[in-house]
Length: 94
Image (cartoon, rainbow, N blue to C red):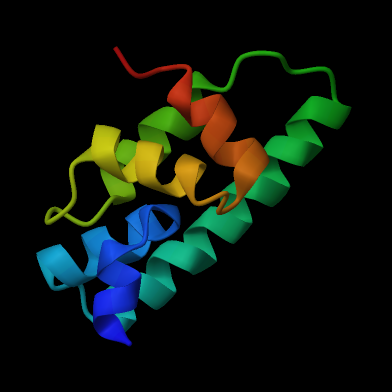
């Protein structure tokens, strides 16, 4: 089962989790923060915000040190995790 996840191109973020040995606590914390950021972004959009660089900065500060920000954002976006959030964060990648 693990090999199916690792070899499946649709599970890029799961592959990063396995490759970098993130703990269950790190993963749970990451998902919780992504949920919070998603809600915050939707609230900001409703208030008329169009720039979300502060959320990107928060993401960079919170991201587990085991993960590369660019690869993490791209993997989450590719896997369609918190899709609107990671589409916005991907705009700040160079």
